[in-house]
Image 1 (cartoon, rainbow, N blue to C red):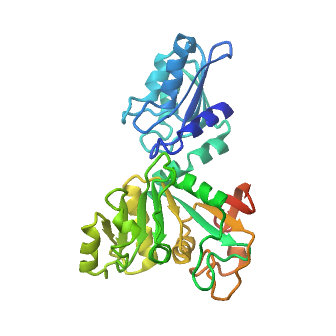
Image 2: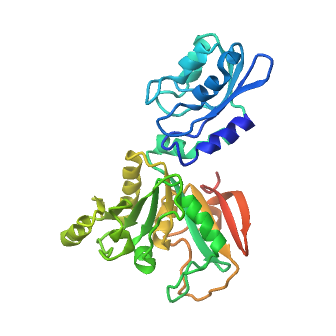
Length: 361
């Protein structure tokens, strides 16, 4: 199963909105005779790849797979049929598939055909591997990764607004690699106006992310780099009901997509935007600020994962912004908890990455 998980990770950035899945086939005598992983969206699933690699050696053997095999016709035929046809005797599964067309049906199909099925092997790791897919299925919204760079005293910009560069070149390289596997990258209009960013991965990664600007009144300048590149790299400007039509027209003529939320409350409109992105089957959303957007997501319990790049600098200043604004926690006991998954020195910087959990979870 550890090897199957390792194989599954090779699909990161290529398979979404499908989950990453890896599989290993063992012959009846325990030898590894086939390996495979889901390599790209719309392509063969991991089980099929591993069974094809094993060939006749799969007869009477064991299939080890990180996710419950599918039992429905989608872009590909059901994997359960391929497993049964290959003559596999036993199937070992990491975690169940929450997709409604599967959700236990794959296991039931295999058992009905007389196969021995064991589930829950390295289940925590297998579930974590497919967390973005599970979030999309369960909540109808993308997996939200909040990223920020801050000084050692917790500031994301100086009191005058300057933020280039708090983090070093090594940290920025990691951010570009992260961007390269995202479905969408989101910023608020404040960040767009202050930094005039491109929000692209350099060098290019596995995916070209949709760039999203949360801009209630359509203040994004037509001369901005985001607007000027909208025909080459997709850009969505998310506005409110009060956005002037003439500003929207100026952006639309440049190729900018427009999403108009009907909600007058900004937090509610942001949640509606995430639901819209989910309906578009966007699985991984990177939020790069500013503090107001991150504050709204934090207050709404909508951040799933945090990437904090900490630089050994002191900015000070009562007017210097912190990473997350909004209402915040009423007390320390109500703070959302970070389950740290990675701490990585990047030159003098330090990356802390982890899952965001509600207080008491």
